[in-house]
Amino acid sequence: MAFLDAFQDETIAQAKTGFFDALNKEGYNEHGGTIKVIYRNAQGDIPTLTQAVDYFISQKVDLIAANATLSTITAVQKTKTIPVCMMVAPSPQMAHLTDAQDNAPTNLFGVYETLGYIDTSVTLIKKLLPNAKVVGTVFNQSEPQSQAALDEIKKECESLGLTLIALPVNNSSETQLVVKALLDKNIDVFFAMPDNTIFASFETIAKSCGDKKIPIFTSEAGLVKRGALAAYGADMYQWGYQAGEQAAQFLKQGNMNGLKPELVKIRKRVYNPTVAQQYNITPDSSFQVLK
Image (cartoon, rainbow, N blue to C red; front, side, top):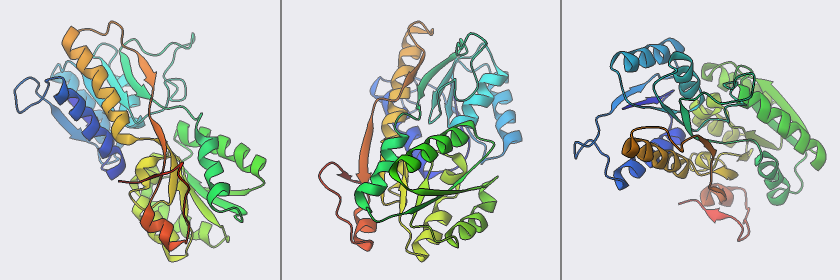
């Protein structure tokens, strides 16, 4: 089998760990010789991503595990026969992978997320910082889930009486300058969206916001460990674990019978106690301390 990471990132790496832990629990691991894994990381480079999938196809792998949106999209576009197990990605509809009848590719299964939780993520701002007025964010216009998430956040900010300032960023190399421009607009909080550019450059964002004493809220639980204050969203490790359970089922039965893309099962409220202390915030018992 093959495993494809779109880029090097601490947050999506949690999904990879969960994926292989689930396989190991079912008796599939390289150490025991029950599987052989060809691993590639495209480091955010699209041509490298494409070359990696071409290589997997040439090696006639039985399965491609795709970590993050770009990996999933590239794999499904390049092969219609090799099964693709998705994780850390939006629904096939949001990723524009469905056909005219809204059917997902027949070789795609795994675990996706929708934006049904985004509004709850935004309400955390009012819950923990009731005096906040202006929310800032950045988004990648080329990512379908980023644009869709922005639309949801706009609606929720409006309903909560919050002003949203959103600036576009095309890649992680631009993030520092764009975030600096955003911070100059006197925002009260930064909202980190489900966006691969944000994932790839989050340390830069966290440092810039920290220097200006601007707390970060997010819909991605995995970013709290990296410096966000609080989140309501999918547990990245469990997301990968859920995908790994599906992959193990595929390996056991040797076909995709009963397998299809499914919604992520575990979401949670978490906060970073160190960051919370910096802002003199004490979340209530509905939040879990990040471990």
